[in-house]
Amino acid sequence: MVSPVKPIKGELKWSSLEEVSVKLKQQQKPVLIDLYTDWCHWCKVMDKKTYSNQKVIDYLSENFYVVKVNAETKDKINWANKTFTYNSNYSINNFAFYATNGETGFPTTVILTKEDANPIPISGFLEPKELEPILKYFGEKAYLTQTFPQYKKTFKATW
Image: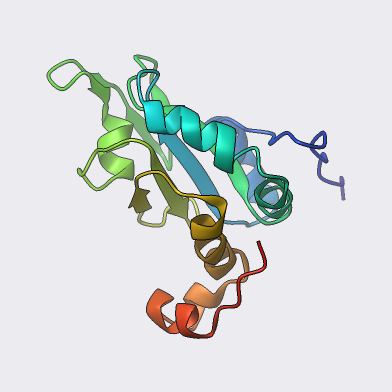
């Protein structure tokens, strides 16, 4: 088995959805999608403050596949045997509608437990301490046996 590529200290190695689709066939892990736009102030703050936090980087690198998707991309996006195209009526890619269940806002952190799972969107800026229980809930597979509110009752933050 090929060992995973370790990120450079202080950097998160983002993949494309296409790359993650291939990786999921080799090893199942939850997928975190950072759904952003170029004009979004809080998206940039989340990059600078949350996705550059070493504890976030280490946990994501070990337990998730991570993808950045520009919600306004005009490129076709292929995911879960579907092709998503740019929607000129809304100036957004239809993947953003799919990933957010139609409730677009940016940034949105989207969790997928597997390729064909329903997206779980978490809208808005998240500090590392706010992201920690979400990541660990999915990274530790607690979602298989309990609800998130149940998990949070016994969760002990370490970040």
